[in-house]
Length: 194
Image (tube, rainbow, N blue to C red):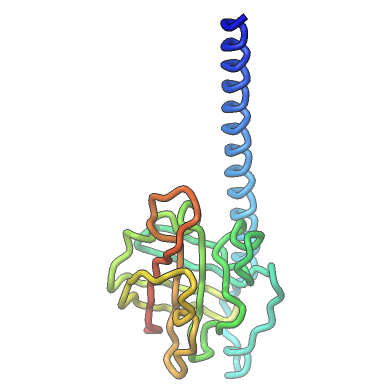
């Protein structure tokens, strides 16, 4: 009787483990498909012709979930779609733009967040002097990293205005190795150079 119980528990445990691995694989595959789709949509939006007026350069109208543009990280050889909003649904598709912050050419803070195990997987490899490009339908904007630091997850100073300085801020969970949520965020700040 005891041997049968151990056998059934073993079979159940093995089946549950295979099921969890299958579910995780499906989730990773689905997320990759969504990110690739969002990136293709962003590339389709980007045009080579620059707008003619100052208003066109700095006016934006995006709704939550819209594809905004592309974050290009040359040092990591990554192109990531930028999605309006930072809820889980948006972060599944790419890098989320914190809606209360600005966008390129608005002379203020631009705040982008992403998961450390997907879009910002190698964020810890970036260093001061590395460049980040934000590509949008009205042009490409270049930023140079000048600082990296760690804050508590509830530290809202990282989204405060930097007007008139245009600062691109990237944020992800820290430490990078954890598999669950954490109470700290890794922050990268970059100044507009072009």
